[in-house]
Amino acid sequence: MRYLRQALVGLSVGLSFLSALGYVLDLYVDGQKPPPPRPRKVCFVPLGPFPEEQLAELQRFYESRLGLKIETVAPIHLEPSVIDSKRRQVIAEELIALIRRTHPVLANDFGVAIVGLTAEDMYIKALSWNFAFAYREEDHFARIAVVSSARMDPAFYGEPPNVARLEERFRKVVTKNIGLMYYHLPPSRDRRSVMFGRILGLDDLDRVREDLEVRS
Image 1 (tube, rainbow, N blue to C red):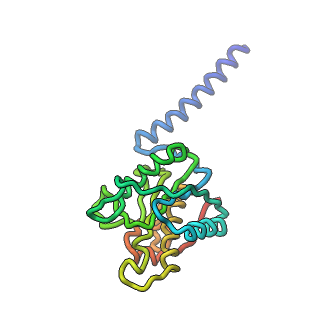
Image 2: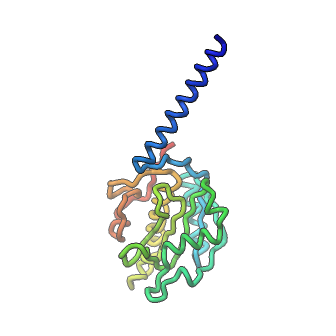
Image 3: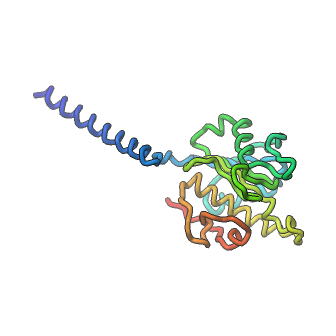
């Protein structure tokens, strides 16, 4: 009788395991990967010259608004391979690769969400866009993103400089990427939400709110 009970318990455990395994396999068959655990921290990586005061203000902002203490590493020098000299822009995909080469341990730590920050004008090589505010690794649960402030500056378009406007716009795009990568929030269809899925220009960017509603 004892052996029968042990056999039944073993069978039950085995069936539970197979059921869980079947669920995971179904997710992969359906083209859906099971979500990984949320990262435990966010790290900022300056790419090229980036204003130290702006970096410090970003850290203060997220600690005050979200209680999120963000770590930083030393700025990474921009290698020639990340710059398209004809377009006078940095290449988003190459910036991701540069982060991975420079900080391989950090980049391979699934507990870290990384946001690269650059003041250089940026474009995505795989797309036909003239520029990009941001780019993330091509993965549903990407952990590395790069954000460019260049075209958020009114001075870029020959207008009077407006540091407050530049920093507000930059925070919105950084916040969206923190929402996606750290909090695992989905893109929104609400054109006023900072998580709006298609922020393609300054009109879109100026329309969205700064606030990020996070799940507890």
